[in-house]
Length: 502
Ligand code: GLU
Image 1 (cartoon, rainbow, N blue to C red):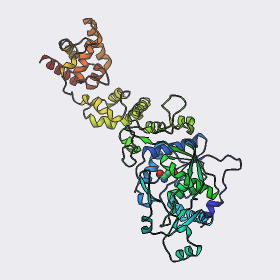
Image 2: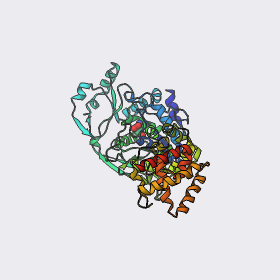
Image 3: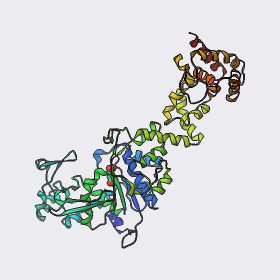
């Protein structure tokens, strides 16, 4: 029990009028991918701490062994690191409040110790009821889940009966003893005071028959002993929170400030599925979103700054973040907005960083010898996510089949006939041209425009159509020809003439 001693004797930087240092924690259960909702909790915890110069802690909540998923802890570390949410304390970084993994905390005996303290105070009791008895109890449906309301049967056991059962090695759980009368008021920073009738509070299990604490108990013991000042979590915990308040009251502890976050829904206002995988951080990266954009987007899932501004770096978020501005209403995971935001981040990237990310997508689409850097530069301000690159540049690889109706453009005053004439006339000029740089090619075509006395577009439109086969391209005719080179450009213009001649 040396561990407990250490945990108990620590000086708490708090109370008696002295402001505690802000300490927040991200407390994930390693049960799979890191869903946007989880990352949002982590981000807000991080921002609350950093806004006030406090500490952000990582605690791994692995007491529900049945839900444990191999590799999930690594995903948590990877995600926090990639997202820039550096923790000040955690399993890999001792800050004097360890252990930081609940399965290791169990070994210190801390949960049992506090559970026994509650038993002594009459705030908890041993329960020896077996499965059969429990399944005969009446159930209630709470938030879609069937819940057995325990009837306090074992509360009436005498001290001697309890001792005898324990001595006989009878399996037991430890339950919270909630009063049948009165009310409990719980305070949330966003939802305000929530008051419930104590009679409605189930005598929840604190220690399971395997000796492990439940989340319901461990979160209270840990948040208190780790001096946590602010708890941010999904509002699925809101309904249990009065029971946690009762635990704090029973211990005589001051609860942390609670911030329960609004639900994140999909476009159809349905809850984003946690294990559906559609919106995990790593999936979004795979879909071509950049980390900074994802983090920026997630920051705005429920929180809004004072101004209308939407683009924030992490440092700017730290400066601006005020959790009082988090909304209580459900917030939609708007993929269109995320794409837009991602596009803004790509526009703002320095070219080398951008190119490093764009290159694999370019190489997947383009196998011919082409100046990939030039092509990358063309699409930088046009893509929203990297996979957009493919359909914007694939015409460089191979001229797509196209309909000659594309040569007709009202505003440019072109039609198939005028285009045939223009292409036929510029072909010998382009054949004679050796320098296929954009500027030189532009000079050739501009010279032709001047001689003909027509509008620029009257010439550029058919040339661009012929060399790209596309209505929209990431660059103008001569830039495209510069990348294609002389041979391929001429081949495509001849092809255009042939198609228009048909
Ligand atoms: N382990 C809980 C979860 O992953 C944490 C909830 C909390 O932050 O208290 O949902």
